[in-house]
Structure formats: structure tokens, C-alpha cells
Length: 160
Length: 413
Ligand code: HEM
Ligand code: FES
View 1 (cartoon, protein in one colour):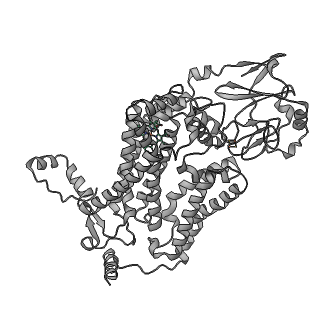
View 2 (cartoon, each protein chain N blue to C red):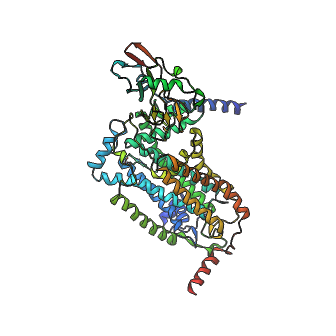
View 3 (spheres, rainbow over the protein chains, first blue to last red):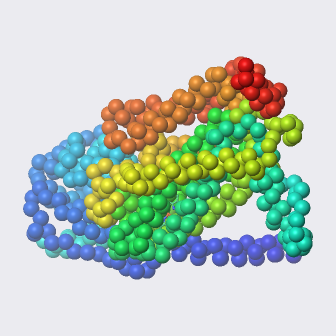
């Protein structure tokens, strides 16, 4: 009985000491606060251009797509995609594509307007994304992630 | 480090102390009277060289910390300060940076020595696995050290390597956030890497003590791979025989080391690391330090994220299982004519993978990495188990003394 009680209390003690030691490594309050939403002025982004803004230490690509780019993104058969998602699921307004600019392979920053599909090309291990930010070729398993965002006016976008 | 000591202190003070803390006896039995096989060659001097390199890294590291600032805004500048303003700072930093490379040169020679002479086989399994643990700790230490100067390669190397953990199903993303202490590699990451880079070398030192302890329990292997049968005939005392031979090899190695520091101090580094880290721009071609390249090539050879990461880690973990994968009764490749061929092919495949790891991941390079990666694993998982059953080894000498004396006779004739 005493052995079991000692063992049980000991296990709780070890756990309650270990948890703070592990948990302190997670993002602290100031890091989380610095991840607050940011605004982007859309009127300054010409058609065809990609603007990179920094949010939570990561680049966010805001791409003003041309009609040709939109057409390419819409017309691809879903069955040919490694991570099937329609273009409509990835954008709120077809001209504006907003994605986190971090390659879903190992985190490098892909280069815009490059690669076989003219979306993005990652120089690190050769992943190619299309004009909807979807993975088409290479080792990356997933499409470029879409952050949460909203159009707060005709010319203003809020990310976060 | 084992067995009763034959040490007898000469002075009265020595006897008084020894009966309270028998440390002189421990040192005497480990490094003076300790019997070493009389046929050891120079490949056996790398253990001592590795111990010296660990000391070099710890000493230069401690003095670098006196001038280095682990903060994203100051780290890069503090390194430039070390290079330009601190007295002898350039030499201390070049010694530490090239010292890491020399440490890996020595460990690779040391490990290949074990692989060639079958030093991982019974009764040395625990000794071998402790060695693999030291190697893993060295890789972690070197990786985190390379992040500290906060150049472009530091930052993007850290990003790619920490992202390896995001391949783990379900919990991967949470693990990477936890490792970073944020949403990307940033100041909290630099701080913790600095803390761990300071800690791990001392953990290595601790495992080295266990490694040497295990060595002194089972005794050294030797080029003929036959056990010591008669201590008087087959062995020589550590001092002076091994001490002087190790000392000579260490001095030669230090001259090689000095050549890198004073003539080509930046050859093994990457020029992009003299550009301050920029989280918004990835260099066109990122490569890890040379000592990780074979594993990096294996990572990129597999066309799936999780698969690549699993293959890369398996390439190291497989080493722990060698004692049971190798079925041959004979230890040394000297008496294994077929194994010898496969061994050198393995060395060639590892060097080839190292070369491919530095090349861009496209076309023929990827194909070649795949072929070599297959051989790398086949060597351990297919060749080793089967060869022990099919190979006819050459006749072993009856004892270490017989092999040495036979050579001495034929040399005279
Ligand atoms: C196993 C032993 C060690 C290895 C393999 C190792 C490896 C490395 C490497 C590869 C670098 C990057 C060098 C560069 O490119 O600039 C580095 C930097 C650094 N290390 Fe170590 N290190 C070791 C031990 C230590 C220890 C014990 C300390 C502190 C007590 C230390 C402190 C530092 C500092 C302050 C830097 C940044 C300065 C610099 O980059 O030159 N290291 N280490
Ligand atoms: S990080 Fe983009 S392809 Fe590997």
C-alpha cells in the first residue's frame, strides 16, 4: 500500500515538474502577441505582381493574378493534383491569391513566376507550384497554405 | 578503468590519499599499466585524437562565448567583432569552426576503422552503440553551432533541419513550433540553440567516459581481430608504447589541422554565411556542412517528404544494429577477402553520396543518389547478414603474438 502510494505521488511529482520544463519551449506570450493581424494596401499591387509581407516571421505572398493565370488555375483537372483542391476553395476573389510563402517540404521560400507551372518554384529541392499555389511536382506534400484573411474594404486586406 | 589496481604510491602522502580516494590507481591502471594488443596500427590512434579535439572545441568555445551575443540583432555583428577586434579572435574562431570539421574527419576514420576490423562484434556491442550515441550528439552539436553566427546558411540550414520534424504525422507541426518557440526560426530558436550548443559537448564528454570504461572492460580489438590470450605475450603496457604512438599521431593530426586554420580557413565553410540571415530570402542553393552531406543526399533521394526523413535517420540508426546484422564469426576484414571488397565499395558509396549531397537535386544527380543510397542500405541489411554465411575466411593466426612474430620473421628473411 505504502509502495503504491509513494509510487503514485512520485509519478505525479515527476510529471508536474517535467511539464513546465517542456512547456517553456512553446511560443511565449510576446511571440503570440506579435502574431496579431496586419493590413495590406491592395491598390499598390499591379496586375501580375506578387507582394511579400511579413507576418508571424513568415513571408505571405499576395498575388494579383492575371486572367490567364486564373484560367490556368481553374482549368486543371483535380485528378492530376497531388493535393487536390479547386481554385475556388483557395481564393475569396479570383484576382487575389493569398498564401503563406513557405514551401511545405522543408520550409524554404519559393520564387514567384518560376518553374514549370509559373506559380512558384522552390530552389531548395525543386518543388513546383501552380498559379493557385498548389503543389504540382517535387517532394513537397501539400499546397502552399492559405492563411486566414478578409477583405476589409475594396482596397484593404487584413491577414490573421 | 576496471579490475583491481596494481598501483603502489611511493610517498607517505600518496598512500594516505590513495586509501581515501584511489584516483591515482585508476589513472595508473587505465593509462599506464593498461595492456594494449601489440599489433595495433595507426588507425588505433584516432580515439586519442578525438579526445584532444573535444578539448579543443570546449576550450575555444568557452572563450568565444566571452565575446559572442546570442540575439538575432547582434549575433552576426558579434562574430565580425570577434574576427576583427578581439585579440586573436580570428584564430580562435577559425580554430573552433575548422575544429568541428577535423573532429568529424577523425570520427569518420575512427568509425570506418571499427567497420573494417569488426570492432562492433561481441563483446563490444555496448562500446559500439555508445560510439554511435557520441556521433549523434556531435551531429546535433555541430548543427546548432553552425546556427550561431546567424548568416544565411545558419538560418536556412536551421529552417530545413527543424522542418524535418514536421514530416511526423499528426504531431509534426506542434513539434516544430515547440522547437522554434515561435512560428518560424527566430530569436527564441537562436537562444535555445546557444544554450544547447554549450551543453551538448559536456554530455559528449560524459558519454566518452562511459565509452572508455566499456572499452577497458572488454579490451581493445586489434588488426587481426583475435582476442588476447596471453597478456604477457600478446600485449604491451599503455605507457610508454601507446602513449608515445598516440602522441606522435596527435602531433601529425594537429599539423594537418593547423594547415586548414592558417592557409584555407574558409574553404570548408560556405560564403553565404558571411551574409546576415534574411528570413525573407532563401539562397539559391543551400547545402549543409560537408559532414552531413551523405545523409542530405539520402534525404533528397526519396521522392516523398516523410520517406526521405525516415531514410535519412535510418541511415544512422542502422549502425546500432551492426553487431547483430553481421553474421560472420571472423572480425577483421584482413581475413575476409569478399567483405573487404564490399567494404571499399561502401566507402566509395558514402563519398559518392557526399558529393551528390552538394549538387543540385535534379536529373542525373537524383538518379545517382538513389543508386548509391540503395547500396548504402544493402551493405548493412543484405551484404552483412548473407556474407557471414557464404564467405570462406582466410585462416586466422593462433594468437596476436604469432601474427606479429610471423611478420617479424618474414621481414628478416
Ligand atoms: C563537440 C564540440 C563542438 C562542436 C562540434 C562545435 C561546433 C561548432 C560549429 C560548427 C560552429 C560554427 C562555426 C562557424 O561557422 O562560425 C560553432 C560555433 C560556436 N560554438 Fe561551438 N562546437 C563545439 C563545442 C562548443 C562549446 C563547448 C562551446 C561553449 C562553451 C561552443 C561555443 C560556440 C560559439 C559561441 C560559437 C559561435 C561563434 C562562431 O560561430 O565561431 N562550442 N561551434
Ligand atoms: S524546401 Fe522547398 S523543395 Fe524542399
